[in-house]
Image (cartoon, rainbow, N blue to C red):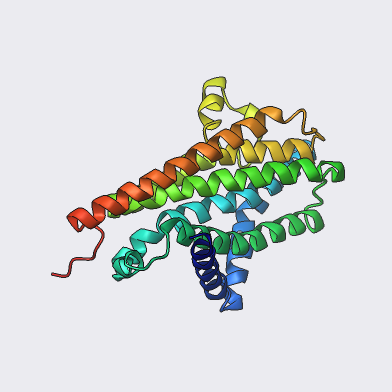
Length: 266
């Protein structure tokens, strides 16, 4: 069973990486275009005379926020798109576990998104002179790993939810983008938000991850200083991963029972 799980993940991951890098122009578009928004915020901070640390805040926020789009569109909407193409029933009749397929989708999407994120950081250092604390790399990597785990576990929950919601799920995906941009503190420190909004934002793994990576790479916080971030990310990741397992099983069971997972041709 484990080998089948791993083979399913590898196969789906390979397709995602291969398909996402067929055209060089796609990579350029995905890297350069998002940088325009980041550059606009950086130049605004420079014009207002904000502390130099804010440049690093913006660069790290923009780099990590790209993973949220991958979670929403790359994972959350995947099964819905497969259903629209008439492929979902073919997937369901194979022995491949859905969790393995989603893991492969997540890993493949993470590979492409990481290229974009790393390029954003490199350009931020070279062009915008962003400064980072080298000693904070290890805490930042641990925070980043837990953030990715929590985010992609959440994406697996979205995959089942959006499949059942259909086109309404598509609208919900678009509706979530701006509030998450605001609550994640993509372009500013989380502490700039009112206390109530900070509490709400702490339920979003991306928000905690961005804040933790910034604290380690810019302000030099240690793992001990970031213990609350670590506990929150671990709790969110484990709980959403377990929840995604049961939601996927429920979705598959009900879909096979009422036929709602197949594309009906009129």
